[in-house]
Length: 210
Image (spheres, rainbow, N blue to C red):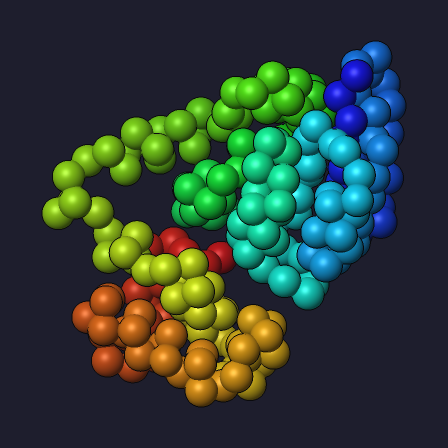
């Protein structure tokens, strides 16, 4: 039996996932969490084969939670769930230790296949993510500059491009405004940009924001 934990801040999403998995004979949901802190705590206290982890929990970034969970439970297969465009978030999640990445709009049958696959020790990616992974094998000179950003810098870029203020970003990332400013300065330097307006145009051009 595959024991699954669901970490998502929306009760209706957790209920929907449980309903889908209740129709299988080999998968059971034995744990839940609605925040990143709870996800880490529950994962430490109980045994699970697979964790379904929302990449956008309210208290902490999903990638940070993923890194902590893989540090605590390296054998736990973490399948990231998200509403975000797969092409960049998926690559970062996989590099951070995720066993797979699944868009929440995927078919229920795809979720079941993904859980079984990662529980068996394999990776799970959609065809779109597989193509993006193949693209990352190209020479460094062909890589977009944003791929050189750290997870924190990339997160800051997305927040700025979405119109968030410095204080809002610092609150979202649980960092001081000064630290966020440092990340902003670093990403501007790496992207060879000079201000927020250029940064927003860059993010839109590269489809990093909706």
